[in-house]
Image 1 (spheres, rainbow, N blue to C red):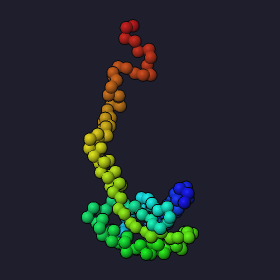
Image 2 (image 1 turned 60 degrees about the vertical axis):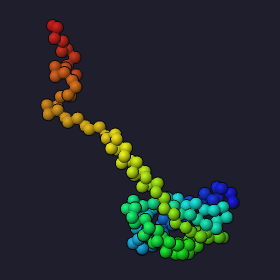
Image 3 (image 1 turned 180 degrees about the horizontal axis):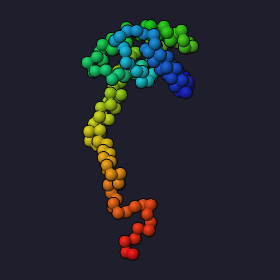
Image 4 (image 1 turned 45 degrees about the vertical axis):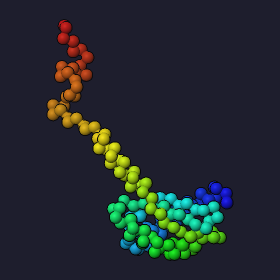
Length: 144
């Protein structure tokens, strides 16, 4: 199969499966699951759906069981909505990349906190300027 066509099939499957998980599957075990990507074998016999979630790590096994129980439904919906000669067998695989990215951001924030805004001067003067300097008064020459 031409790689460009394979990419299109993966993209269509990713969108279709993401919509199914969001709109049609009502299993509470798979709420807050996001389809990261879909990898289809060159012969279209299998589709590996990489998913992620920010739910606690302890719930990953429960989520996996929910997705595994929905595999046949997902495949039948793909058959209805996507025009392919061969509908791939679907496999759901947890992808920790979003969780790891979130963890990295948290670590970076602790290492390099954003700079604090200096508190405004109640007199309205710029704290770094000399009170005698008036930017609008160019004739302010004390050596008269």
